[in-house]
Length: 358
Image (cartoon, rainbow, N blue to C red; front, side, top):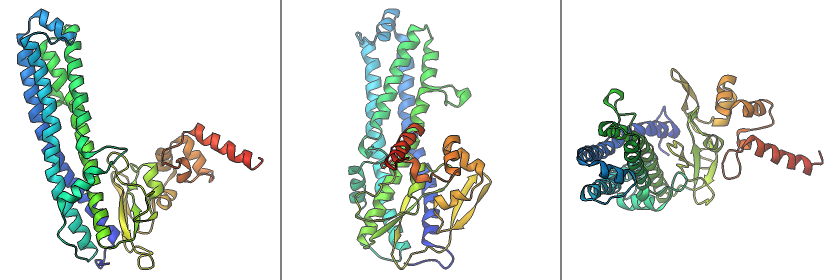
């Protein structure tokens, strides 16, 4: 594998992930511009229409009865907004997703010092669309639930506002938010946060699909899990860090396994790259960061951190069990990678003791 004199393969991939996060920020902003444009138009039309409603029409609207021409127009505005979100946003994401697929495939081939045929971005992206990510989400449906839930909350806000005697301005501010709080107090802002999360996670899914396709094309047989060394890493990814899997192992985790997942696979060549050369970064808290050997996995790194960090990451009770030396990070998880409750853990231990006659 081609390696820079001073950097390891792991160094380069970790640095690349940081660049990808910045690129994702740009793509998030572009999609949010579309969302804001459609949403602002919807709120503006609703505000004007609410001003035209009679008291009887408001009463009917509060009961979800779209019986007059104007009330049917209210429903049409909401329908059109929902349709625009579930159509325009996926189309925008697909364009950037195809471009990302091509770039990621070329990047992995180049960093491994090998050449591949010109990547077929649409083929890789379509492959990503077919595979679920982050607990079962699909790219083609990732904006659908958000749009439906937002539309429902908007309808509820209108009905509740009317029944509570709120003014039309108060109702629309409840939907859009107030300029004083930079519109972060409105219903629509919850959707912006959802968009940020799902776009970043879906782009990670596209990247990981491109990596997988490229590794296979280059004949890579084994993959090593690389999580992030900081306090935001989940218990599952921490327990997986450093593990090596056959690329065709059907039981290996498919990252991203949860929203905003930063864990990736890196190529692993047995007997040639038993050990990585170089460093990998870590972050304890803002202003407290550094580097450790690239061969250090999360469990080893975590073991030498101070107790305050360990207690905060594990929680008080799990920290006490960990500190006593009877529990490793992996033992706090069930076979599917879900975190055991302390009661579940205690029940399992009782079964073990019983089997040992203790």
